[in-house]
Length: 63
Image (cartoon, rainbow, N blue to C red; front, side):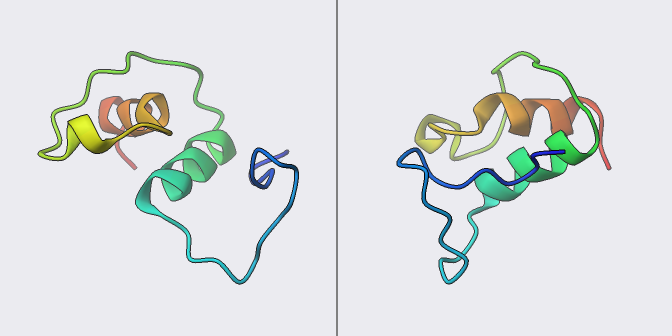
């Protein structure tokens, strides 16, 4: 299912806290959501770098 794949360097760090964006990516992957628009209306939208498309998916198809 590959819901959690670790960091870009290939290392999985279970002791690290999961960010809201990482959680969104894992949840969207687990639900089988496909790529979507990167537009979100969160107040911190400009700070969202990684996970923006996953956040958008969950916004379009709420859980």
